[in-house]
Structure formats: structure tokens, C-alpha cells
Length: 352
Image (cartoon, rainbow, N blue to C red; front, side):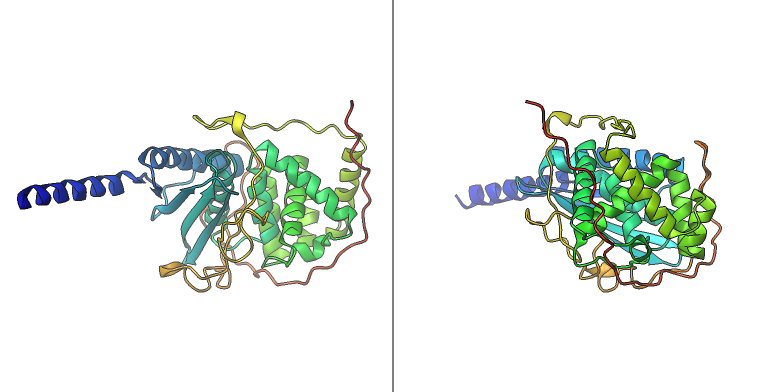
């Protein structure tokens, strides 16, 4: 009897060990941890897929393998979805940890590409990216459903008089109290600038703004005198789109292999500063401001930026990222201020 109990205990221990191992999958650039072995395999494949896809979209080429793999913790639930990625910028090297939580299809189609885009930007700039551009570009990497939702949200915010003037938005290092204003405006401005030119030009604009100021960046990359003129052009573009005077091209992206587009739903996500997963907040993918563990505790990079910046990205499809550093003046903080209401035309009534 004692022997049988010992045997069962040994078998249970072996089964538990096998399950624990099966729920962790390591690839070249990720260590994926989740409760189910098949989910771990799927998210490991998708993480590498998005890492390659987003780097090619934004930089024009794949990134080299990371010095250390990114730990990705996945929790599949039936509640609102969100994610957070913590960065440590250390002597030109970038280390990160990522965690995502929520409904399976939202994680695959929106949350994971959003978080992976943060890593692409971090490894290109080698220092914290202005919040509006970091979140705006990451939302631009999500699916059509989420991008459309942010378009409508930005219109509502501007019409309510809650917008942030771009000269203040561009200077922000931290999230404002109304975090969804930063998300919606950041996405809208990013979309406008990218679709005026392309993604590499947008990244070069951000780099120039960080290094030489935003007025200089406007003049160099978008041929406008200053941020105020850029803001005027952006608002006028939004009005034309709302009146139907500007055709908006469909930018549907191909779904990753194995993703089920028939189950896409809008998701909610984390509030600023901490990856607390709750259906109520609507901000997703925030780079937290501390509170992690190990190397990610404390001021995880955002309060300790390195004064190094990647060389500009070439604007053609054969773009290359030069590793030579360039000195930068850093990112001064700034207070937000609300411009007058824009009063875009209302949404047309649905046909009956």
C-alpha cells in the first residue's frame, strides 16, 4: 500500500513537471509562458511573426536577434484585454519584459502586435520614445477595428474641447491624466503623418524632433514652418475626411497565420503606470513607470534615458538602420493645454 502511494506521488510529480515545462516555449527572441502548452506554442510563433512583420513595416528590414530573449507572459481570460511592456535601456542595449491578458483573439490580433511595435521602436531609438509617437505607432499596428475606434474617439475628444495642443503633446514624457486623449490624438497624428509620407519618414521625424526640436523636424520632413502649422493642417485634414472630401484608403492588413478574423471584438485595457488588467479602462499597452521586479523595478528606463539615437531610416523598401549613435538633447517635459473645440461634422445617420 505504501509502495503504491509512493508510485502515485511520483507519477503526479512527473505529470506536474511535464505540464509546467509544456507551458513554457522558448524561441530565438521570446520566452513565452502561459497555462496551456498549445497556447504557448501559438503565441511563440505569433510573437516572432509580428516581430519580423513590424520591423519590416517600420524599419524596412528585420531586426537582428536580441541579446536576451523577451519574457512574454500570456494569461487568457474572458474579460477585457490589455498588455504592458517594461524596458531597461542599459549602455545601448535594450532589455524588456512583456505581459498580455484577455480574450484569445484580441490578444492575437491587437494586443500582441501593439506590444511588439513598442519593442521595435525601443530597439531602433535605443531610448524612450515620446509617448504620443510610441502609443500612436503601436495603435497604428493594430487591426482595422481598433484603429477605426481610435479615429472616432479622437473626433469626439476634439469636439468636446478636450484635445491637447500638439506643441504640448509632442513634449510629453509621461501619460496625462486623460490618458485616452494621448492615445487617440497620438494615433490620429501618427496616421496623418505616416499616410502623408511613409513609416520610415515618420520615424525620422520623431528622431529629428527629439534631437533638434519639433519645429525643425516639421520643416525638414513635412515642409511646414512649425508645429502650429502642422496642427492646422492635421485638423483641416480631419474636417475634410469627416465631410467626405478626402477618400480614406482601406489599409486592412493580412491576418497572421492561424488568426481568426471572424472573432474580432473591441477590447479594453490597462490604466497608466501599472499593468492592472480590468475591463473598465480603455488604454492599452502602456509602458509602465515602475514597480516591476529584478532589473525592471524602479525607474525602468523612462526616467533614465540614454542620449543615443539611431541614424535615420532610409525611406525606401531596402532601408537599413545604422548603429552609429548620434547625440541628442533629450525630451523636455511639458504641460498639456486644450485648444478650442474643433467641431468636426457629425457622423452621418445610418441608412434604414
